[in-house]
Length: 200
Image 1: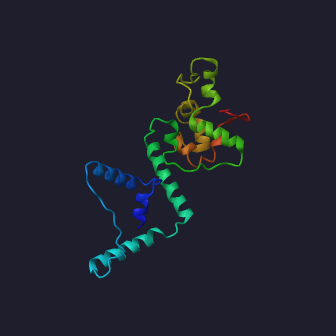
Image 2: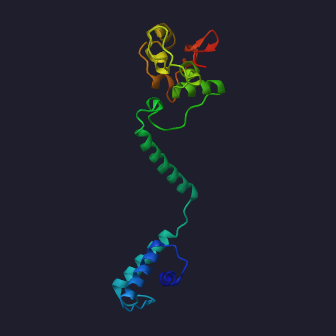
Image 3: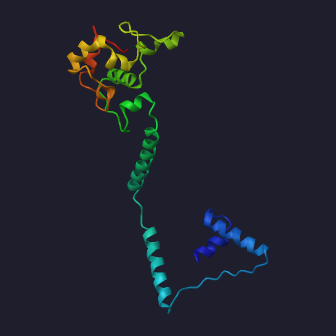
């Protein structure tokens, strides 16, 4: 009965109902005569009674209340999966090396530390990118002549090997180890010079 009411209504937005109406008009234009009829029940026909029972049970299932928290959780999970799939393709992004799996960053209580850590992670610091403000050439390392980058200073430059050994007990470091989800606890000790950050 509800289907017939939907077909009779002019305000339905259901795409399936619209399709049925379009097909109905098409058949009328070809000269066909169609009569819609509602049959109250399938009483007395065992197969049809079983079909009625199945239809009613499916309707009952669909009309059960949906918990908002469950829907929100499912939508959030789906969105996160979509985001992760796109992030997996960003292999040339500097941050992707440090954070291949999306999740909330662990934040420190000190806002200054969070600012410095964010700049290190995205590879943009005054020391390495100030030249852009003055239309200058990229800075080079005064020890080895390589382009000055966060990666070069933290993991590559041999001039900083003693500092790495002192604070990280190794010369073989990588950015995920130093700047990852939980940054190395000596990161801010290892990169302070005379009370100032190496990376302001």
